[in-house]
Amino acid sequence: MFKYSLNHLPKTPEEIKSFLEERLTNNLESLEIRERVAGAKEKTSFYDMWITCDKGAFIDLVDSLFMLDFPIFHVISGDDAGDFVLLNYHFSLFTSAGRGKRVGVVVSVKVQKNDLTMPSLYDKIPGIEYSEREMHEMLGVSFEGLPDQSLVFLPENWDEKVHPWRRDDSGLSPKHIRELS
Image 1 (cartoon, helix red, strand yellow):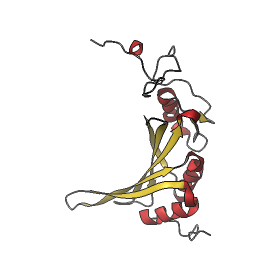
Image 2: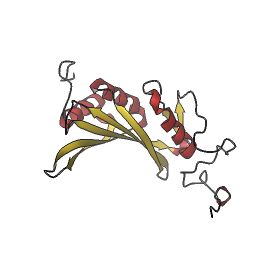
Image 3: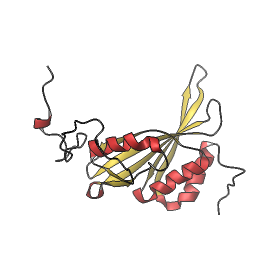
Image 4: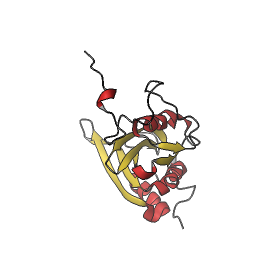
């Protein structure tokens, strides 16, 4: 049973961490809080929360963030990490106004190359469309539930089997690179 109610939702980074750990029990690989200080007096400016979760727990984790506040989506960053593609979803939560009240949340998910699919967040956060489409064209990750997975940055005649940010055989070859001078 959760120790939080609608009258008292977690506000501090430590409370948010406990809330997420309690809701997602063994589905989080890691959860770390980093304090960011700034200014002449070096006071806490904001906090970052770095979370790594299994692909199967991703939607539950995002739903848990929605229970706390509307997670402000920034961008998805990604990397070819060998056997998997690492996706990093960047959000912010604002527990209240003022210095030190913003919690940046980075959710990292390892997407195995033998199953390059992720559930789309488009139905929850429509503004995520272009980030998901970018990860699709640059890294080859398909987003289940994303209505439009057409190219955003690459030319219309681009071979969609070639993913420019990949370091394996599906990445760029010399024929894709041209001299710019």
